[in-house]
Structure formats: structure tokens, C-alpha cells
Amino acid sequence: MDITAFVVAMSIPSAITAFCFWLLERKIQHRDKVEAEAREKRQKEVDERERAREKNEIYIIKSVGAAIALGEATAKAVARIPDAHCNGDMHAALDYAQQVKHEQKDFITEQAIKAVI
Image (cartoon, rainbow, N blue to C red; front, side, top):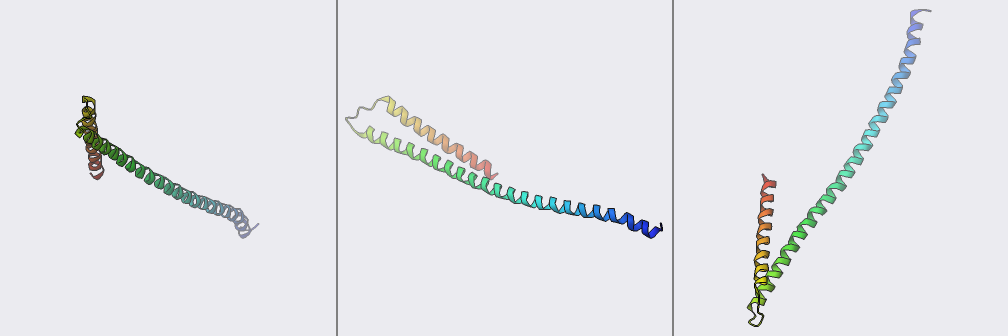
């Protein structure tokens, strides 16, 4: 057996192995691409849910503010009625509602400043 036949005989398994590795690498790259697309899709869904959650929080805060404003207006209107005989409970509730409203406003302001900085 001469050297040329030996080299040719050795190159055939090497070529087959190289081809198999090339196919394997191509399959891995395709799988990575599919996984990356799936991750992007999941991330978009998560971002969408997060935006909806943030919007819901804003509506909840607005609703609480509206309820407090309505309660304050009602308490002040009832206090102006001469025959209403308002007791200290209504005045205490009005003071408490105003305190909570201001605490909530301060908290939201503090959180906004932290988000900016």
C-alpha cells in the first residue's frame, strides 16, 4: 500500500466525521434561533402583561382618590346641614381620609423620585 492510498483511506473517515459535525452544528444553530424567537415572544407577552398591570395600578390609585374625594365632599356637605347633628365620628373619619390621601400622595411622589434617580 502506497502513501497516497493511505492518505485517501484516512481522509474518508475524517470527511464523514467533519460532515456529521457540520450537520450537528447546523441543527444546534437552528435550535438556538428557534429558542431565541420563542424567548422574544415570551418577553413581549411578559412586557404586555406588565404594562396592563401598571395601568391597572394607576386606575386603582385613581379610584381610591376619587372615593376619598367623594367621601370628603359628602362629609363636608352633611356637616353644613344644620339638622344633621354630626358627631365626632364623621369629623374623625374626614380627618383620617385626608391624612390617608396625603400619605398616599407622598408615597407616590417618593416612588416617582426613586424611579427617576
